[in-house]
Image 1: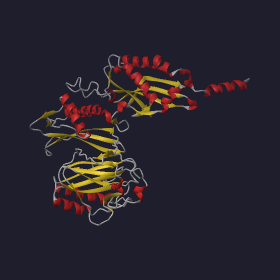
Image 2: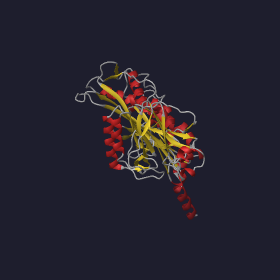
Image 3: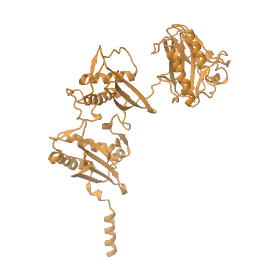
Image 4: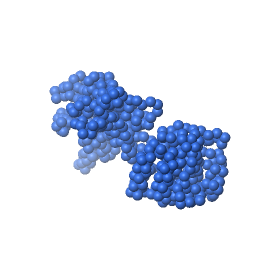
Length: 490
């Protein structure tokens, strides 16, 4: 009898205490929400204070959390909006709500919080979970006494799935672990404008005046986003725009951090570097995926001229040709077995066109093998220079055994270590400029077959690019270049 009683006591002690708290959804509705609202509305220290609701991990706000923890956070936050006498801090998941509506004057305290209400989820043994809710005094960095609620118990199958799914917390939108997405540029611009607007209000060195926008037609995404930030600042009346005298410029730039993750900076820079006014900036992280275009088919009897962004290079792209002879002809550097293996009757080629007569050179940064100049089958040591007439196209065949789809994307900059096979066309409309480019390009190893060849990399490539920049600058505007990445290589 004593042994049986002892075993029963041990079983009770080993049983998870959280089992008594019942269903999680019922606890949220009947216990947690009323408790949080009652505490927020009745504790004197909370009167007229600002709150931010977050998910905690090890006692600290987390920009990534389980879907279930975020659901609990959203539930109590949404319910707390009706509590009189408190304010909910503005956060990035509100899609710019209120950003411009009450922007006279701009309230830079809307996203500041005096207290954090934190939700923390932990898994205990025996498949039980614990959810705790506490309030943190931000200034004192201490937990608020008398504000604590905990649930312990089992979760349903659907809640189990939510626990196993980790997502970014949208209230941290713009931070590295919760970047904006490329279709949310309007919301990202609103956030950046708010940050810059508050920087402008805090500084006392003078009034910044920038030029009114003169952008017309299509522009690159970086320029478009900077203009959108400027428009938001104008709506807030936080920055002066003028058609005449100005003392600052606003500009944006995206820096690749990793794969498709970029850090985007918007800066307002005084034109007088020696003045008292300082450069102001704001940044946010955003994911921008490379957009590849399928190589379009060129009918043999026609030719296209596509407008581009260069000085006189009108277009640079990959084209799919129905003339296999162009790729297999003995006049090209790719004739032979590598082309025969494809056997589908098509070949791919680089195509460049210009609005003026120009001398062009083709380069290739081979993925993991460095930068080379493209030559023909003759493998002559001199740089291969080609002539393109104004309004016409010139083509150079691509390696068919390494190019699978012909999908490509424009490259807006040179890179010492690109993430994909990259091709460049460099052109000159002046004979002296062409000779200077030819002599410099001749320093690159050449590739005159379908096989990759070791090219310039690292510091050696950086020095070569620095010298190329000097040549292009010296002979501007008689020089131009464009680049593109190709997909499905090697």
